[in-house]
Amino acid sequence: MEILQFDFMQRALLAALLIGLTAPAVGVHLVQRRLALIGDGMGHVALTGVGVGLLTQTEPIWTALAATVVGAAVIELMRAKGRTSSDVALAVLFYGGIAGGVVLMAKSPGSTPANLNSYLFGSITATSPGDVMAFAVLAVLVLGTTALYARMFFAVGSDEEYARTRGLPVLPLNLALAILVAVTVVVSMRVVGLLLVSALMIVPVAAALRLRLSFARTVIASMLIGVAVSLGGVLFSYYGDTPSGATIVLAAICVFVIAAVGSGVLQAVRRPHREAEDHLHRHGPECGHPAVPHDDHVDYVHGGHRHAAHGGHYDEH
Amino acid sequence: MLRPAAPHTTTPPTGEDVASSRPVLRLRDGSVTLAHKPVLTGIDLDIAAGEVVALLGPNGSGKSTLIRAILGLAPLSHGSLELFGMPAERLAKRHRIGYVPQRHTVGGGVPATVAEVVGSGRLDRRRLWRPWLTGTDRGMVAHAIATVGLAEKAHQLVSTLSGGQQRRTLIARALAGQPDLLVMDEPFAGVDLANQEILSATLTSLVAAGTTLLIATHEISPIASLVRRTVVLDHGTVTYDGPPTRDIMARFAASPDPHAGQGHGSDTKVPPTDAEDASEGGFEIL
Image (cartoon, rainbow over all chains, first blue to last red; front, side):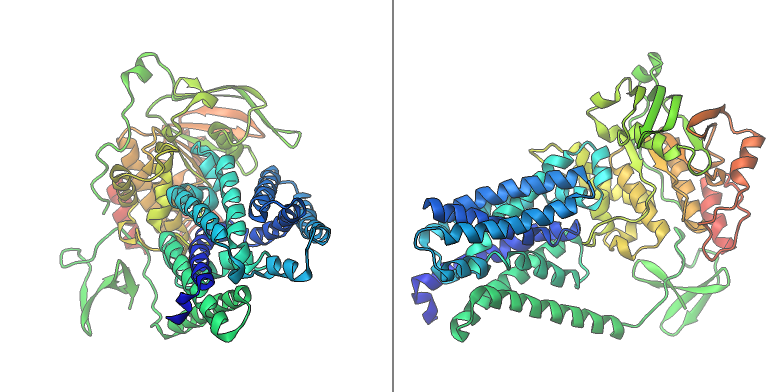
């Protein structure tokens, strides 16, 4: 393909691939904890970090990373305290992040509105070779940690109290997840922009949820969707001359809508059936319940109604 | 039919436990204060290995708080708790206590299969630097799922199961850790009769395998055949500790469970005499 001849497109596609894999792998745990909007807030906090970087003429990736990790830790500790005021405190932190970033960037040498725009909405073609290297290292770190600790994150996310009785390190695990989200935000910053970062963590997962898979398969499906929409979005933005970040997010939303409509149609088409009451008893020639031939199968009369084997259970016929 | 019961899923009571007459659980003068209100005051409770104890009492009597205190979820404001002969906070092998919470749904915005949820019950046997489940872990998960009779639903989403089946999933999660002491909070609330009987059968096989049970309930009938000792709580203090007398049975068995028997219209629950009757007898009623 001709576009692969451009170095900047190679880097753009590589960056898109990295975040397409990483963002949903972390996002699935946020969706499980019903914290879908936390990533959004961390994107806001990251902007202050970018501002600090530009003002002090340090590489913005690393200042953004520092600001977001600190923000993530503060958010998680506030959540652990579980006070009702923490909701409002989060809002203050998030708006403070955006406002601080805008002011700091305005005061930075050589800053332009276009510069702010590229951080807010992404500017994938501006990805430097150094950026790609940094993204790759961070992405491998995030993917490795989520893969290793997926079960522990899952256990804490699905039943935090139970996890506590098991002696699992609940607070450290939650802090670790918050930091993974922070890293993902920074990795995604160039590609989709800080205002849209959260979308890539959440929307592919939302689409995968429609497939009604196991937790493990939901993770894999959302990563596949993430990669498909990231690469597809970058290619589309190249040929269609659209902003890459927003194109990727719209692609993800398209997949979500297709999955939602598709699963709805599928459910309507499937023959509805009523499952019989649960029992450990297996019907068979020896079970003592009268057998009644019914079309192509045999029903067993059980307590006045007929049970027919279906997969792992019995249906009422 | 119940599957052939577990080849000892639990560690049998060791000589050490018995010889030194160390109870599995020893609570001395335990008090819990929540939001400046005393919820439990001066509770003494000893449970020996292999005992089956029903913790009875009306709603609000402090049963759940006592369970939570034993599990370390509600801190004692006064008194001391020993588990397996050591101070509770120093018990590193948390898997020795299994816990079945009162909620019977599994939380979270992402669905999970029965096997995945039950797998959480093995994590306390994993180390932080080796967090993945081994073949042994997976074997125990499958075994625990079979013990509660959900083998064929192991790879179904928990959210598609009935309330009673979800409760059994949580019991399997507790069993997967091969606990010596199994603590259950209202295991029968909101569970229909058929599932109650499957649960009773499961508990019977656990007791046969040597597991110590502490069951908080306001309804003793489903476990009447197992329970040799009842502890009655009222307003945060122990008002009775002894065998289930006729009086106790009358107080905690006659009351129809407002949550149970969905669609079965059966308030006349006969305590099952053994596992066989429990699992077979129920189906003929249905």
